[in-house]
Length: 336
Ligand code: UT7
Image 1: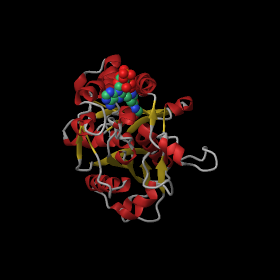
Image 2: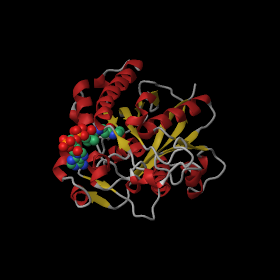
Image 3: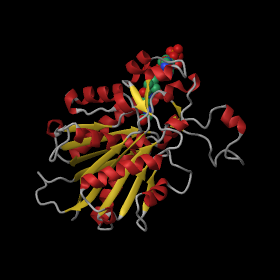
């Protein structure tokens, strides 16, 4: 049977740094509140001329370069995002020509903060089935254009940032399962009962005849709503559960893992997961201080940054887990 291996990673964040102090000039908030409640010190925002596929393009180019492949070898493109350039077609279709590719399938994955791990799972299944051999996966978000930057929206506006991360996954013939680099497992979950605990209501076909009207805009229904406490407690519970399940499936112990790459929604969530699972702090790689929550881009940004920081090396055994809107959650164990 075929397996799949990650052969290159890349990332891109826009240069515009927005500090907590910058936000406190737009809304009633403070650096101390944001750091204490979330661990975030700054995030990146795009300029108005930039769109999600622009960020994705830079991340993909770096991933392709680091993978050492000719981009024409890519036979499938998976794009995880909740901030598409347009409602339709999917962002993969806008990215494909920017990458100079044509003909290959371009599939959007709509699983929010779990989107990248979902896309890795799909790529792994495509490769194992023999359908595709070299898959480019990108997670990219432009949140800054969709945030309510007034005091009304401060509970979410301070958390999210813009960015992109990408990897190339390729077919691998595994000779030594204990040493070779490949994706050991992926586990995917959803619980739609929590859909409205973190959602963007409008525009929507469910909203009568119009999809969107002035009253909805006045009420801020075109901004994300989040039941922060419910999301917070579920994130801890589900990320612990799916990490333990991944370990158990692979008959691994926590000590066998070299690096934990968790979704970055709130530093306190990751600290509590680490505490609950008894993971030493230096094995958890966090980027939230610098970038905030970049949703589908978070996990691949973490991969690319961990490589650059020398924390993720050839042969490292990695456990990754994410939780987000849907509710959706997912985990993966892979050897880098
Ligand atoms: O990617 C997955 C999705 N996201 C998450 O996983 C995020 C999950 N949730 C969270 O991270 C946390 O719930 C938040 C960071 C959003 C909020 O932290 P909290 O400790 O749950 O705060 P809270 O919602 O209980 O709010 C405490 C107070 C409130 O004031 P009152 O009612 O006590 O007077 C809020 O109005 O803090 C106020 N508040 C703020 N104050 C300053 C809310 N947002 C802000 C803010 N600045 N930005």
